[in-house]
Length: 407
Image (cartoon, rainbow, N blue to C red; front, side, top):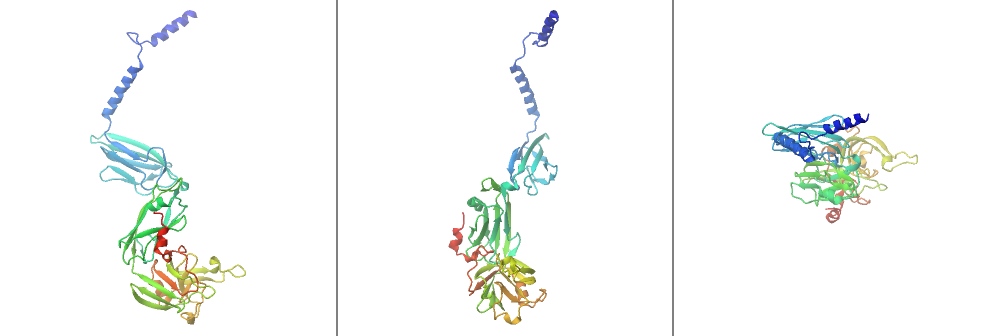
């Protein structure tokens, strides 16, 4: 057994020997050999250099312009972007083959894998891969806005943006939004609280001008750990200039278009117990017919039900968020229009039930009004409407408006 052990040791030593000169190879020789292999591989490698944005393993990635591929010294031949579930995301390689981007915004809280292939001038391929995760709803904010892209609106229509989360860094967010007019009018933003930002010029928009809003909120920190995810350009048109003045004393409305009186219409405004707000109010919604339930705006009887509940109010146009409308009235006697104020605060115009008679005053006004047109109420015993009750910031002076800007 002792002899066997010795022989075994000899065999082991012989197996680990360094060759003819019995010199073991050192680490320097192994490194040299590997360097030769690397050099040979590099010599045969593609010259194309692919860059994927964002970097592999990135989190809280934006949804719009954050994912893209670029190549130097070559052209892209294939780019594939998929969710972790394997759903492919459509995208396009640029005509020159130098870049790629997805066709549409990515989804929030989603993990993506991106694989890219490119060729150099000699036809040799290069490959690059990366995975990343987009920002979550908890870590992002979005703004819903009016008016819509391509819409034609009246001269009083502000740009109004409502954010789904409170904005603490209002200066950074406002700086990432621009609103300009082809008229050259100065446009300023005003914050109503932490979640609403409106833009308007000093005077009404000039008729027939074009307004452009650009949102560049991708990656902007609205609050600690909460970033924007929107990059968007919106363009809308300003139509003719129409401003209507409701005089609650004379009980008439004068419709003025482009500086000339177009029509005078008898009205019935809020009763002495429930007067109509004074002030400049912007039409924000139009409904050919709608339901009006007094209980939804604080008018309840002793049983807790609405003092009124009319299921088919014709030709209704919203003037405030609190429930002020200018609308058709078929239930009142013809004699009240132009002679008595009888409503709960709305401005009523004579109309027919069913909204089917185009000859009624309310139908005419509805057909000749745009969202964004201004209705100004004067001589009411009530107070002036609050600027943030609807789209009614015109009731602030220009100095007051600019004081609410974070820029």
